[in-house]
Amino acid sequence: MSRTRSWGQGDLTGGLVDQVFAQVRQAVLGVIIERLAVTRASDDDNVYFLGEGAVLDRVQFDTGPGGQPPFLVETDSCRVVTSNVAEAVAAVSAGLRSGDVGFGDDLP
Image 1 (cartoon, one colour):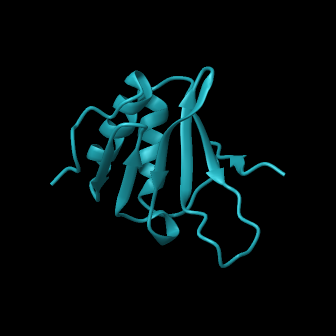
Image 2 (tube, one colour):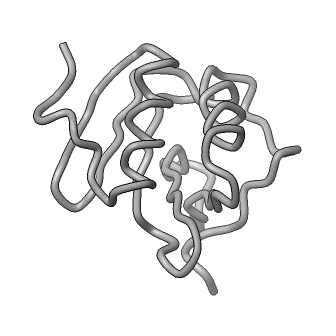
């Protein structure tokens, strides 16, 4: 069984993460979004993996319950925590383009 499942444009949480992903899809053509697949309903499935091309897990994106902030954006070398949709989009887009969010430490 796969640890993730594809998260398409029609898949929605009802939270602000839907706005983040819609904007990322516009900014980064060909982005692939997958959501963590859990085995029990009580497990946290608010974890997403974003990539493009041959690199599927370039950015890990965590949300609060129901796709709400705070958002945690992580690459191999950077970590950004924000509750702002625009900042989350910028961090994910930068991480997808370069493999590194590029903001240094957590955003204020």
